[in-house]
Amino acid sequence: MTEKRRLNVLIVEDSPDDALLLADALRKGGFVVIERRVESAVELREEIENREWDLVLCDNNMPDLDASSALEIVRRIRPEIPFIIVFGGISEEEASGVMKRGASDYISKHNLSRLVPAVGRELARYQDLALANTRIGELTRYDGATGLPNRQHLTGFLDSILKGGKNAAVILVELCRYSELLNHAAEASLLKAVAENLSSLNHGGMIGRTYEDRVAVIFQAGSADIEACTRNIVESFRRPIRIDGEDLFVELRAGSSVSSGVDAETLLGQAETALHCARNKATAEACFYSEWMERKRRERFDLEKALSRAVINGEFTLAYQPQFELESRKIIGAEALLRWNNQGEWISPAEFIPILEETRQILMVGEWILRKACETARRWQLQGLPRVRMAVNLSAVQFRQPDLAEKIGIILDETGLDPGCLALEITENIAMHRGPEIVSTLQKLKMQGIELALDDFGTGYSSLSYIKHFPIRKLKIDQTFIRDMMTDKCNEAIVRAILMIASSLDLGVIAEGVETIEQIELLRDCGCSEAQGYFFSRPVWEDDMMALLREEEVRRFSMDSGDAYGVEFGGMGGIPV
Ligand code: C2E
Ligand code: MG
Ligand code: MG
Image (tube, rainbow, N blue to C red):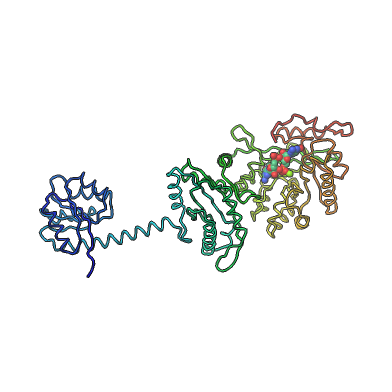
């Protein structure tokens, strides 16, 4: 014997007798019916809002409410519930009109034989819909690849802790490098294994995937020491974890935050900020949110926005710092240095150039710098000023352009500058990207007659082997060695060693950051032939640089009398360095 099905039926009907007839027809059809009759919009809304109904049967001919309005009320609150119109005095056309507006079926009061099959069919459809809804709910709350709760689900969970006025903790764990090493399926297995490892630490709460290779542990913090928990997590991954039958040491970073008085998105955002901090630190695997991190992040973002505007509007200028030959005491070159005034404030290139590099905007700006520096050097020559070599700094990012040498060749052609009057300063870190392409670019540049100098020598990934591979003409001793050369014997030894290496490899040397006469004397003693620094001149604007070149012919340096070069140039330019 099949079990009778319970049916909660809401009957919208002004006639109690008709309502009874309908309920009876359903009972006869095998349902255990619990019915309720309403006849006004207010009653209907009240019932639909507050009670669970399986079915609505609605008369089409009532004094206070028509079927269309009733349908609208029901659909607005419970869009999926079966709604069947029972008509007495209207035509089928009218009833089918209401169907078009979303009713499930229409039945004549004079022929109720269709009622039970129609209800059965609609209930089955409703059940399918409910199942589909549950599945959709799962899909929207769980990550498809790992089956772990997704960000939306985690946020909801976090929200429920915070809304209860409790302290919530968020620990974000991010795997390093694996998205590059693994395909999606393998990455998902790894994330699942990581999540299992995290759950074995028994923090309770919920563990899920917030984003790509990032897993979150969210729990009610109570008196838990979140910093200790986070460290604990990092420690637990010092042991290998088992993935697909193999043991693997997993490299990760963690960021965490704990709070009670904020919303879920804010708390997740704070943990993300802490994670960014951990990611950028070479030393720390875990960071805990603190307000300064957010401030730094905002400042950095504001700077990025201002910088994009500067690139679009061309807000950059070039300053020039003369370079001297110590023996002849002549200006032999000028280094072009990028300057940016952000709404009244000079920003150091050491601060904004790395951003231009990260965002690759240095490609556009770098081309502008090259063109501008070459044009300027050519203009000086056309005005009869002494021929000096223009030194331009190039970023490693620029070196990754396969057609860099050709681009520079075109700039030289278009500006009319002799390639021998251009020097390119590259830093040691391009050696990290050493490859046949870079060596070939450097070779092509050298073949054009351009001088290549290795900037900040001694600070980067110094390796004598790549000096051999690269067609470098000159080493530029980093200013940190020059600065303490007089007091720090070790720095003096480094400077001497660099000069010796350069001499045996037949390379030129220029010292940068020279600030005192004593440094110049020592450098000369060690055999250094060229120098650049505040002692001679700070970086100056173009007009002042031209004035220095104009004086070149008449100026004589008198080192022995202690008549420092800087005195002659003192106060020129006034550009912040
Ligand atoms: P760098 O190429 O090593 O430039 C030398 C830096 O030392 C310049 O700083 C210069 O103003 C400063 N300097 C020169 N003489 C002295 C001195 O006697 N004492 C001290 N304390 N400093 C001195 P600046 O202009 O702030 O540039 C910093 C760095 O930014 C540059 O180091 C270079 O790596 C980068 N940079 C500057 N302009 C450009 C550019 O146009 N393109 C690229 N890619 N990088 C640039
Ligand atoms: Mg330089
Ligand atoms: Mg330098």
